[in-house]
Image (cartoon, rainbow, N blue to C red; front, top):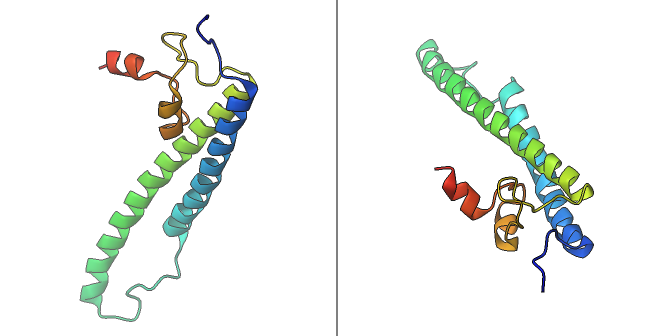
Length: 125
């Protein structure tokens, strides 16, 4: 029997559903992170002494920076998931961009936006 060169439409539909679920959750998480960064009416130090205010402003800046980094990562994850949906529509999903062989279903279930097989990924190191 010849080696499969692409996943069937049913298999692609299964992956599409998985990606859509992850994409919806990622978008919610991204909105939460954005709200964390832009939220100004928080429980902060406006009604406490100046000493505590200085200390807590530093911590707030640090946490906003961290939230900013997390938001950037989340946005990149969303873009990768959207690109995976396009590959599903083009019926190119699950094909390793290095080897041209199918990426294992186990890998795609764990990392649905993967474009490299485990072997190709290991060869990059």
